[in-house]
Length: 357
Image (cartoon, rainbow, N blue to C red; front, side, top):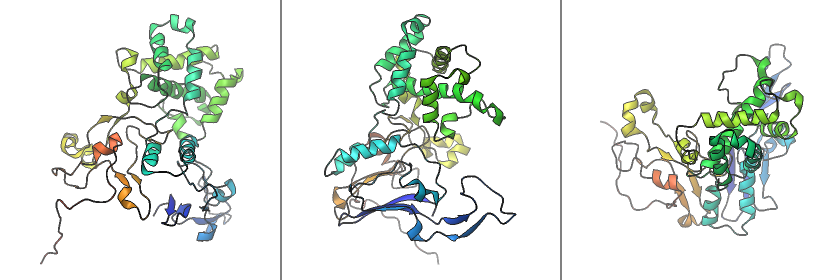
């Protein structure tokens, strides 16, 4: 299997986290970037034994969590070449949700999984409101519409929120204007290069530059930082479809697309092979992970020995046949976050595979 996070829990309440999969013992390099083995200074020396793999067993807090962030100490993670992680915004919300309950129920865990509060972008929302001054708004009515949407954003990545879409887009376009001149020496970068998504550690240097506003890091296209900030605002507005800003909701952009591989090659078959397109709440920086083409392959809450209380979600159905009524019968519950039983109910249909004669 590939190297993945894995959690264990037993009916007695013991819990553990480790890394699943085989990891080589690297000599002479850390595995973060490729290196030549030609001179013998770099090599693999067998595999790391289980006792040397990063692991956390029965933590004193009684809780374990992960959001693709660094879970163990830097020294422990160094063994697997683990310098690059997603920053801990999503993991922090999961952690705080776990510590907010003394003895979690299935409903408590479902609520944590569906948490779409935009805590990560709160400071960006405040910074954007500081950019949209009365003078800036007076220069362009659309900026005024944007400010109103941002003021009433609701603090969540809700499908109906226009303000969340404005804050998120502003941060993305501002990151491009901040990092682009710093990376010109790389050469050959496309205009739509995803600066923020290419560098997991981009948030802290980006925020430091934006708040400290050093003159030598100002994009040479602009005369002041306020001008650069407003350019990101105007770029965001220019990317919106026509119509009032309040109608340009997050769900309009964040409409999930779950496509069958065949329909990607033969689009007209999507009518039968693809899941319904639906505006969705959630985003990448929160427990409710949901983007246009990325989301949870399943959600599950279950206690060992108490499986009848658990619930299970998957973004499809039990049948792989596109003409079956069960081809997409799990999609609605997955999209809406409605609990469905973890254990199977009575058999409705049975598929028998009979060897040929």
